Image (cartoon, rainbow, N blue to C red; front, side, top):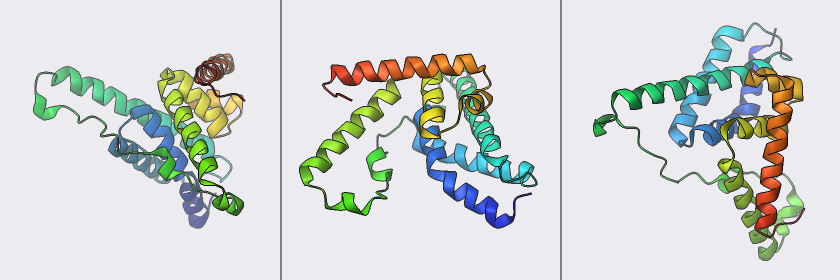
Length: 188
């Protein structure tokens, strides 16, 4: 059983990654914040008695289910109120910038040249744009495998699909990202 401090530390350590994952899916900053908060509340309310080693997989699954619930609600809301502009969901205002949310952990990188810093920022922005352009399942598999660093089995459990599907989605995502970035002149 995880202590209150361990649970708090776990949530603090996963907050930013969970927000970025939710934001990639819903493309709405406020909705992503709500989804992460709801997921964290569900984890604490229903699974605080679980061991610390079980929390990462539980949280990933809860986050995935909460995002699916959000999409279902949006689909229902849009179907019911498609002609009533008062009830439409406001679109993303474009104020979220992933480069502002990244933290620099390497003190040596703070003294890099402006040219290097700008080049790195441009590359990160292109990668972000290409990740956002991926189909939803490919994006989810890619982010879980390479951003969250889950193994194939954990990713399959979090996505609710087979390990073969995870491998296929990841392979297609990596191929699409590689092709798109090479077309823009970026080389590995």
